[in-house]
Image (tube, rainbow, N blue to C red; front, side):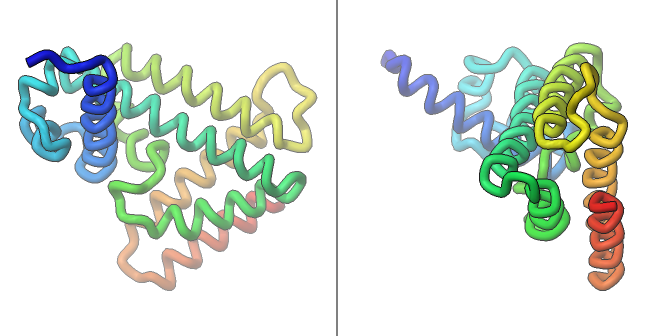
Length: 188
């Protein structure tokens, strides 16, 4: 049976979404192609019709994860104007930090996996991260630079690192303390 181009795209999207959730939840090594296919409700053969390898699915998942961060930044800039960073930090350190790991920010959950990856994945990550940082810069007060200002890199690192630390501790009060400290540092 032949599938329409639209059906193929729907299946590909279903696989990519399942892979994205799975990689955020379990890491790159935490599941294989069979697990990714099962989570998407397809066969391993169907997986390979859409992706050459697990690495290819991971690379696209990384690009999607960083792209979601960029889209969220742009949405908060549009919605909140000059107070976007405060509102974004509140959301990121609150609701996004407390989300189930499969729904977490790809930057926070996939970055450690990227550091163990090959050149292609790291290149995809870097390209997407630079685009996200440029979007972040467009809403920064000191956006007159040709390059991403150091304060933007610091804010992004504080957000990702703060969420990572807060997720890792057992005591919810300590997690909140970490998140509050990061939020206050970003507002400087």
